[in-house]
Image 1 (tube, rainbow, N blue to C red):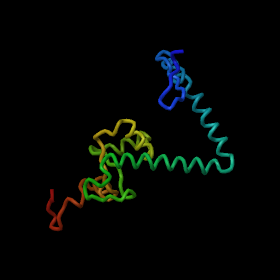
Image 2: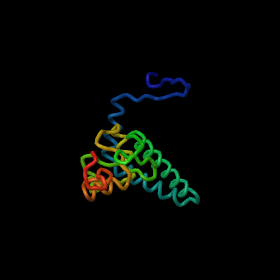
Image 3: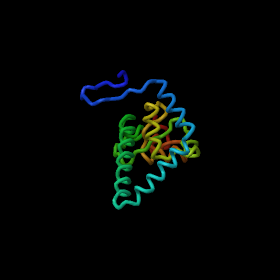
Image 4: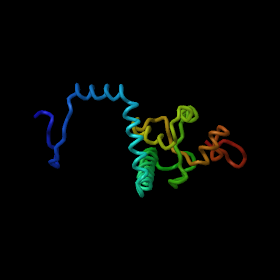
Length: 154
């Protein structure tokens, strides 16, 4: 059987032919609504079971924190403006703007980290602390770039 092969850990892995994979993709595209409804119904039923809702919430939070941490670590793990390195104070900034456009396209902030990982960490993002990010968004500059005299530092 040419579809079956074993990996190093001797667990059988089934490899699907490209034709069959294409068939499944097309079938899914044609019946997306059916799959989504089934998934929503199944999740709704699972939430009624005592304790499952809390487990799902905790699992989701762990996944979001893991994605956020991996993205922040990839982009340096500290604010590129002031050097703040506390994970809780850091945010992802769109270097050339565009965050508002993404929010209008309904990409939630929690999904942003998954999207960045899916796109293999593009160079259009950087890490800033919330203060620097907010100042850049509201005023167009960061106060860390000014001296007390009001002169540009760099």
